Image (cartoon, rainbow, N blue to C red; front, side):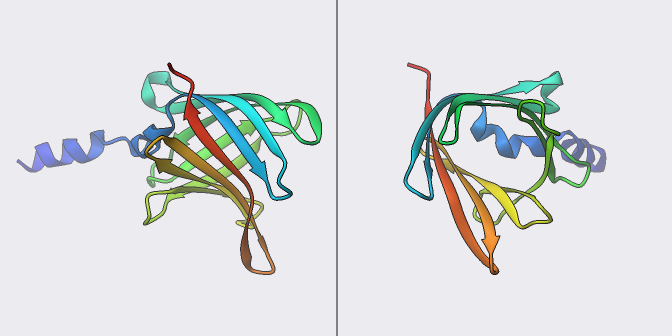
Length: 149
């Protein structure tokens, strides 16, 4: 019986907590100045379910087009790592964890900025934020709507 419990614990993939993101999405992002931008986003399982790959192409208020590719994996500690690539820039490395309210928070810039992923009944919501004078400021909110008919 102990062996069965141990095998069950070891076979649980912490990345499953992010499964609400898997799919093809139309996105609408609202920036803090009220600007709207739309895009096409896909999250998919790759490498036997040990990674999630994402691809985004869409509008950006300060450039003609925005494109990002990335990979997310679970760590041995049950947290997450994300590697995002934008053009020829160095990859953005973020570290994530599950919050008590069900959202997944990724942080970067020594935890001074990040992205929260929030499951919803119709898809998901993403909040990009930064800390300003110790206050949590949402700088962009993105809604995900299924691109599937």
